[in-house]
Length: 340
Image (cartoon, rainbow, N blue to C red):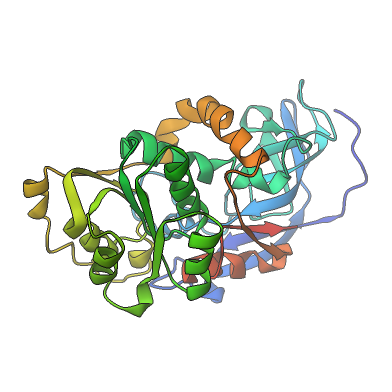
């Protein structure tokens, strides 16, 4: 066991205590005090410095069968985190190393060393390994380039475009030669950000009127690719504007995550017959083979400022839940992270 610094007696961690129906409520969760765990052989103890909150976590709060196991009631929730190793019983990982792992929603975490990925805080800010250079960045990269089969000259529409994934999708499309990139967002501030900072050709506030009408005005010649983070009326609008051979990549549908009744599907699916269009859902976990290529290509764009990113940083483990609820409300610009 590698020597470790003096640790506090208490580790605070968030537990799910009841499964939310509709919008999650504070009483569905509890911030619990527990002992700081001790790592065994082949394990490390990590003091989390940044933890991630993401829309997909809402699905894990349900008991419904899905692509990932639901959170267990009365136990710590999970999520992306990056932190400093403070005790190590594993070869190859030393006290003082920084690692990326999946045991967030808590101040200290014990994990098997094989589940920790060393990261370099000198190469990029630690928080970026949860966002632009992490899972959200790879989600954007894989969804646009592999699932949607983007090609130079395509016109691209992105919903939830000011979020961590959407903002990167639009910029990647521009860097790779899109003819036009359009984004939707939920505030005028976000619309301005998309055009002025991220380089989108057009953007609109979906609260200002029917999405289908605003999309047709922003993309009068139609779209070739739609990257869907929202679902609902955005998906229907995209189908209505899809050009022949268009592709739709379904990444998320945040507009329906808290529904208590099944959401109605798009009324215009028959248009896919005319356009020979394709809709395909994807999960980033199926595309980790792209990680080396992603980092090699995107890393330099982040470092030299060609690919810009924003983060919304909330301070304190006690505010982890509020940060998550903020993601569901759309309060964040870019990646939402909690700094511990």
